[in-house]
Image (cartoon, rainbow, N blue to C red; front, side):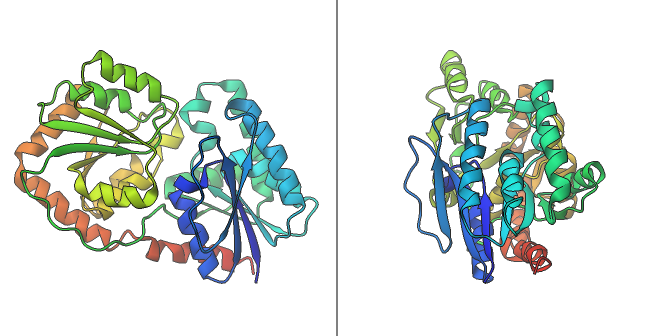
Length: 365
């Protein structure tokens, strides 16, 4: 039984992608250990079929966190038996690459995003250059690589001269959801990090242009948590916008089918977002909830396959509000989007996608 150690900088409790990946690998006969970070306010780990370990760091963010975490991760990996080491994104790849120099094991890279093109990095040339040097040192040494979408795979293959598979971040298949009544509360719903580049300021501004019957729920926290809360207060929208904080995956799965419209609004601020294929887009579909998505390549390709989105050209609050009001008025259009979501929910499932994941690891045997 081969031993795999997968490494992330996230808090494992909320990382649904890694929960699915690790469960699939464990079920396929691998001995899996997932390593992440432990925060001061981390909730207890959920019981999973695979092993889990969280590393605590004195520094909680910024360059000192990444440095400390990679040092701690390096020594942790150095004294753990493993046949395969998996780095998820660039923020763990250096520790994995260096530890492998002292161990006889294979290396896998899982790119959840285009790390050097995320908004937090793309506007900081020196930081971007540092991460790029790390990428060029580590990625060519990997025995296998995969990412979340075909657009990013093509970019990475050309840039790093390394083959990349595609394993989309799809949800587990769920039982069919009942059709929601026409008079249901008009809840707009966002799940994910409250970070820069997610269009959150725009959707809050759009709320001022929508009738009072519309409410907005934000599930998650992030770098903009305080800024967004202040924006809501300044706009006098505190009665219509709810900050739900971090929501556990099992609670999120129950909550999402109850909302009216999902939101995944990204700024075209770096290639990572432009070529993104966020899990929330598929989560809304699995829940039978129509959603607003950006008219970016990957979402456009999905729309051509199964038209269950409304695509936006930009993040102008007036356009966002206009599309929402139009959808509210066109009942038949909303019902058609719902029906397409239910159809796509049988196709876009992790049960199908995990076959691609296992094929990548099987080739290492």
